[in-house]
Amino acid sequence: MKIAILTSGGDSSGMNPAIKKFVEYSTEKGYEPYFIYDGLEGLIDGKIKKAEYKDVGGIIYRGGTIIRSSRSKRWFDKTFRKKAYENLKKEKIDMLVILGGDGSFRALNVFYNEFKVPFMGIPASIDNDLALNEYMIGVDTALNVIRCAIDDIRDTASSFSRAFVIETMGRECGYLALTSAIANGAEMCLIPEVPYNLENLKKRYLKEIKEGRTYFIAIVAEGLKISNKIKEWFEEKIGFESRITILGHIQRGGSPTVIERLRAAEFIKVAMDNYENNPNKIVTYYNEKFILRDLEEIVNNKYELNKEMLELAKPLMGIE
Ligand code: F6P
Image (tube, rainbow, N blue to C red; front, side):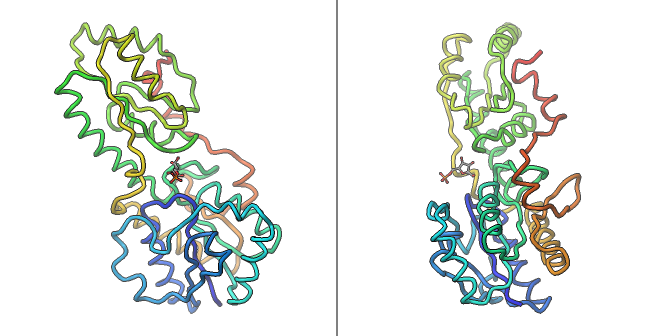
């Protein structure tokens, strides 16, 4: 049996350990592993190549994806999806393993409904925004990159008595901001999922300043698009000089953490062990267990942020 792996959408740290395990474990099981380079774009262009052990030597500690990724506009056009299907037929690929996020699984859903190419999906994206799933490959490394950045910013913020607005990635999902704000002792956490109250925050901050507070760390999710507004708010309403740090793409890089490496290996094992009896599933991680779910179930639901975490962060959003 020939199986091919591709990485799609925003790359995330931990994809490489998954690719390595894919080649090793599928060979162990007697399958023939293939790489599809450049994600869905490469699938359209037929960039399919047999994978070998030597391709994955020394990649376990590297961020990114050695088979590269893309966001494909052409995929929305059926002519190109048909081309992709013909490429798979030509190479006699029996099954696809896709590492990606919500957008990639929606793209896969369309493809599966049209051409019925068997697949297994593995959640990978720093956004952590997949329905019925609590962990995506890349999120732990991103949280650690953010943690290091906040530690460094705190040095300068505290030395200068400033307010720092730190913008995290995540598209419309506030997971990175929420988790980082709690884990790093921020004073403010603003995310798209929850309405915030600046008036309440102002009352608290002014009281804290009287009691001796000398600087602020504010974590703002990129999806809100309000980092400038919050910077100005700190200057005008709180009376603190303020700076913005947009963390940007550094959150996608870095050597995968131990958690990423372990879970990447486990995701691949679960996918490969279940493919023959239970194909066409997304392997999710939920309540500390790996659970196979239908693609339709994933794409027809919306992710939810953890309620306990939201509760913990309420004061940082001005919710009383
Ligand atoms: O989906 C991952 C992500 O890093 C988002 O958090 C971010 O909004 C987006 O990708 C950035 O996309 P690009 O790499 O195309 O600039």
